[in-house]
Amino acid sequence: MSECKAYSSQRNLGHAQSPAPLAPGQRAAIYQELAHLFRTPSWDQVRRSLDNVLLKHPRFLLDSKDAHFHPAKELDRHEKESYRFGLEAFQTEYVRLFVNSREGVLAPPHASFYTEGTLCGFAAREALAHYERFRITPNTSENEPPDHISYELEFLSFLCAMEQEAIDEARKDDADKLREAEADFFCNHLFPWANRFCDRVVENSRLAYFQLVGVFTKGFLAHEWTLVENRQTS
Image (cartoon, rainbow, N blue to C red; front, top):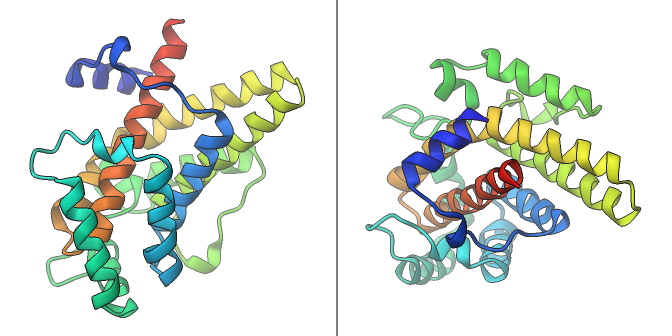
């Protein structure tokens, strides 16, 4: 959990400032939406999924500490761009950010890049081991390594949904084990690199859509870190 503690010192966040935690089922839904938003864009993502998650949980966008990011301005820009541009513009920008461009891959969506400076490294094998522990197999038809941001978010969605199910069925031991699995994967695998990835998305995107997704994701991950830290100290 050292990455989480280091973040605490860096951001100097106090418990009194922490937002109320979400239920596991709510967190599962957000993780799932974000996993969806970090895949090749469709009109459903551009015009529905992003609006859906922002309307339900605006605090993760509004709490942005980036002085250069203005939520109202970017939301207005996104609305205009989503009607002015065709879907191809969003898909082209996705490729430019996450796949390849003349400047290289501007925001590599893989853990191994940030933790090892390569692709398909130890972080990819570690992520796969986590999935296999719960008998989950990534969709190989997408031809992405297992440490792709979308897979990792989807895995946490699965764990949160399973935790909610265990709570609903009064299986406390199972819920506790799933909560521990969430914290382990979040703190030791996703969190050490995801903020840097989000920063690259926000800094390099030409479209408001990806900037909004990046800022919202970073805000939600800050909430998740707070949740883990509070559990550690309670």
